Amino acid sequence: MAYPKKFIMRSCAPLDQNFTPMDVIKNDHFWNNMGNYLFVYSVNRLLSVEGASITPYKALSEKDADYINENYDCFLMPLANAFRENFIGSLKSMTRLVKKLTIPVIIIGVGFQGKVNPDADASYPFDDAAREFCTEILKHSKSIGVRGELTKQYLLHLGFSDEQVDVIGCPSVYMYGREVTIRKQPTLPKDARITLNGHTGLPKKLYDVYSKVESGYDDYYFIPQENGEFTYLYAMDSGEKKITPE
Image (cartoon, rainbow, N blue to C red; front, side, top):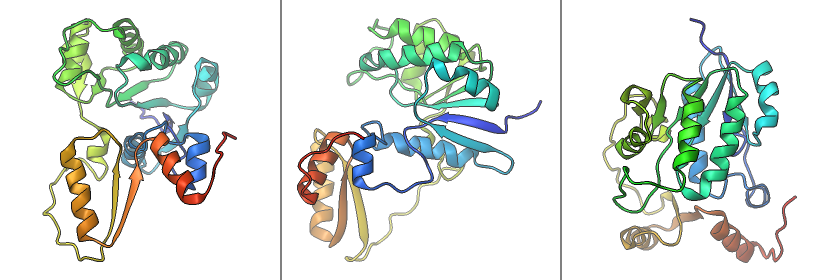
């Protein structure tokens, strides 16, 4: 079997560029969440082997189907918490695109979002959209890679078989290869440069960690995870009073 050589990948931003804060704000390079860049970058890193090329592509719709079919061997779709109510429109849009594709389509790390300890066997507003999306994907791929057992249970509840769903976790776990290791906690000097990432609404224990870093180290940076907070802090710091999309 010939393996794909030319991949196109659903991506929130180009992976080979550095962005200014204003670039990120104006162009929504991280789809409102910095974490989106992490798992997309991980997939790109894992598959960037000799003989393969990966083209990140942000604006994908059914209108792009002919272009994708003619120019690529495989369509990669790294995803996160896509099975949720406020993502139904995006699921339907991606389903319309996949229906028109004639090349393999690979889902990597899709997840189910619910409240704490949700019931995967309950009914949700996004059930029909998720079922139709996965049905179309399985016409182009042997199985669907999901984030965890809860997501697998959800898809089994929707009618898919055990052989059609593989628990693979988040792609970011394998950013540095398949052998995942836990490194011994290093002892950092007081002048170590440290970056923190997060957003409002996190558990108090995480804010306790931030406080320890703030009091224990001199050279640290906090980068907001979501665009609203990122924009607010940047505008305050830069003096920008009006930020409009290009």
